[in-house]
Structure formats: C-alpha cells, structure tokens
Image (cartoon, rainbow, N blue to C red; front, side):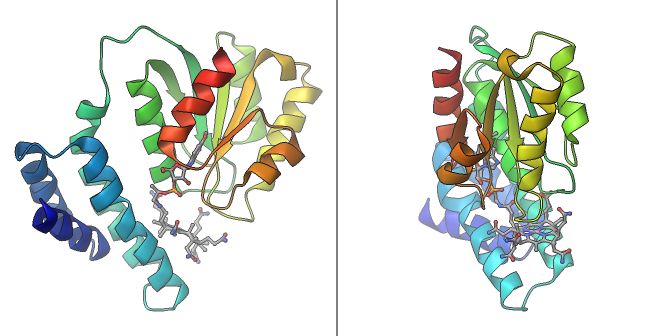
Length: 211
Ligand code: B1M
C-alpha cells in the first residue's frame, strides 16, 4: 500500500489526473481505507504544492492541475465515505466565502458531513453574506458552514455573521467555520459557534452544535 500511496502523492503533486484515478482505484481494490487514502495520500501533496507555490517554483496553473487531480481521487472515495442509510442529523448550508474560489476543503467537509448523516446544501464558492442569509430565510437550515482559504477573504465570515444579525436571524442557525488560515481564536472573536481544523473535526463540531 505504501507504494500505491507514493504514486498517488506524486500524481497529485504533478497534476497527473489519470495516474491519480488509476492508483486510487488500485488502493480501493487493495482494501485501503478511504480515510487512509485521504489523509496519507491525497491531502499531504497539496501541502507541498502550497509550499512550492510560496517558493515560486509552482504557479497558479500547477496548483490548479494538482487540485483537479486531487478532486478526481476524491470522487472515487466519495461513495465509500458516504453511508446512504444514516438518519438525517440536520441540514448544513455550506459555502466558500465571497471572493474565494478554493473548494477542495469545503467539498471534503461536505462529504464527511454527508457521511455522518447531515443533509448538505452546497452553495459552492464565492458565496456572499446575502446568499447565506437568503438560504437561511428559506427555512429548514440548522447550520451554516463557511470555508475560507485566503487571509483576505476570512473577514467575509464576520460579515456573514453580521448579515445574519442584521436580518434578525442569527439565533436561527449555528455557524461553523474552517479553512487553513482560520483559528479557534478567530472563531471566538467573530462570534461563530464552532471551528474545525479538518473535515473529521467538522463532523464533531457539527454534531455538538446540533445537540
Ligand atoms: Co490557492 N492559495 N490561490 N489556489 N491554494 C493557498 C490557499 C495558499 C496558502 C498557497 C500558498 O501561498 N502557500 C495561498 C493563500 C495565502 C494566504 O491567503 N495566506 C493561495 C493563494 C495566494 C491563491 C491565489 C491568490 C493565487 C493567485 O492567483 N496569485 C488564488 C486565489 C483565487 C481565489 O480564491 N480568489 C489561488 C488560487 C488557487 C487555485 C484556483 C489554483 C487552486 C484551488 C482549486 C480549488 O480549490 N478548486 C489553489 C490551491 C489548490 C491552493 C493550495 C495549494 C491547496 C488548497 C487545498 O485544496 N488544500 C493552497 C495551499 C495550502 O493550503 N497548503 C493554496 C487541500 C484541502 C483538503 O485543505 O482547503 O485547507 P483545506 O481544507 C481542510 C481544512 O482547512 C478544513 O478541512 C479541510 C480538510 O481537512 N476546512 C474546514 C476547510 N474548510 C472548512 C470548513 C469547515 C471546517 C473545516 O467548516 C465549515
């Protein structure tokens, strides 16, 4: 399995989508657990890709093809992470905040929450505070889950909470936030209800907010 994981890592890093597909399928066929494929083979190369970008060795196109290759692997393990027969735990409206186009982490959080029995309404990326507010106004939403990957877009989380306050519906939903630059301290400062550093912690945070 170690060799397969190394091939997946290399495939994501170099943006070789076909190799990633082939090797993730190979790992699944060899009884690799979806969690291990995710945590040991698909996520770590993205860290290196970010590092290479910072060092000026990778540019946006390289980041993009690495992201596409990772998404292709994620699609294959998605059915294994989601158990269709779980009773609904509640409804989560998920989105990457305004100005931000990063969606891999958000998609992963969505998959894990779905796997844990939550119903997901995914608003996608570049979601404005008004879009979140309008969705809550439609009713039936228990949690808003916001993702941000850029320090410049994080303030949109606070703006969304303020928009909920202004619309008089802050007490109708819990607000869960996450993404690489987001911290517990930031969560407390902007008055969000929960913060999670990764997708599995997002499930725990969502469950404790629903209880
Ligand atoms: Co961009 N990018 N990017 N990028 N990108 C980062 C984030 C960066 C850290 C790279 C770097 O410099 N090291 C840097 C941000 C610097 C900063 O703000 N401090 C950066 C930059 C600068 C940019 C651009 C500005 C580059 C440019 O154009 N000059 C640009 C911005 C575009 C925009 O959004 N407006 C840009 C563009 C892109 C691509 C489009 C090319 C591509 C995204 C493709 C896509 O998502 N479909 C991309 C990528 C791939 C990255 C890196 C390399 C990888 C991100 C990723 O997918 N990680 C990233 C470097 C890095 O993060 N190391 C980088 C894997 C993913 C599983 O992790 O998203 O952290 P993550 O999600 C985790 C947790 O954070 C958490 O759970 C997830 C799973 O464990 N989590 C939540 C996430 N959301 C959550 C929500 C929750 C709870 C937990 O509750 C609701």
